[in-house]
Image (cartoon, rainbow, N blue to C red):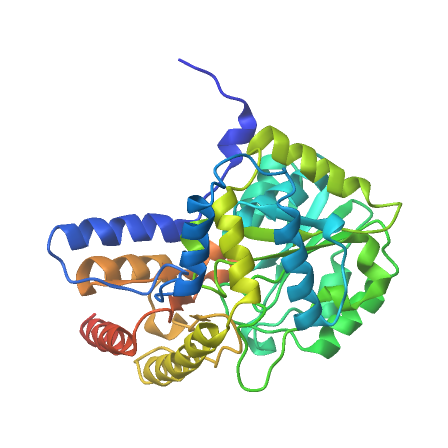
Length: 395
């Protein structure tokens, strides 16, 4: 028998992909499945972005690119960051990566080791905890509570920091809850972090443009007092419906005391993935610099669907759902159904043909909740709500 190192036994996974696989298998058997499980826009990548990649291929861009990304792509990220946050960053601190997860991977293995502690949101994106445990560091959950609008509490977060804390992971707008943390709460957190200069911050801002009801995204780049220890994660997947293109970017600290972090992630890229493919990077430039009409249409559609989802869920027996302020997820409370969340999600897939994700797949505090992605058509959302209602009334 082959023996692998123990760290690999600590790796978790993202159950949304397991649910997707099961839903696909059931559909292949002829079952009618409505998939509200996967966090993926149901829109096509805008045509001008696709054409930019095709042109890049035809123009001969078939070779390696720099490990940090093409300068033109990094400069496009600089322009986009300035337009969305008002903050000017250097292309020398921008890293182009094959998706958003490599930034999580790089930051967590950079600071995680036995004896260290890393704070992460719970419920939150499951890869945070998985990678923390992989490094041998202690995962310390930051509670994300419904009564707080699924925003993190600055006071509670700060109270969890210890001398062993190396990294704090933040996510707003958030997966799986759709919560958006108010600017005032973020300002309070940043002020408190000044008493903990040993703690690095990873801010996952992949859903930055996806806010509703007058909410606006507050990027941590706007706070110069933490800039020397801030890593910002972002990318193309959600905003431009480019999940399969595997395109992400991150912005790393820019001061002399912290600039070595960028070189560490550059070396990691050389060792792990070499570079991001060239045609996709040209598509990424076109996405940022081209027309944003399709993005606006997608967001308007998500907003309509969000309202349909919330109204429908609140009409179901034993279910309540606060209105999400960001991303494209609803996180309804199903504790009134008397079902355990994961068992309910499984039964709804197998017996009602609706794919959802049980809240415990996003953390210990996810029990009593399920996640629905409303990145699907209004027709399918209404069909799903109807099926869930019929199931709950008969079970």
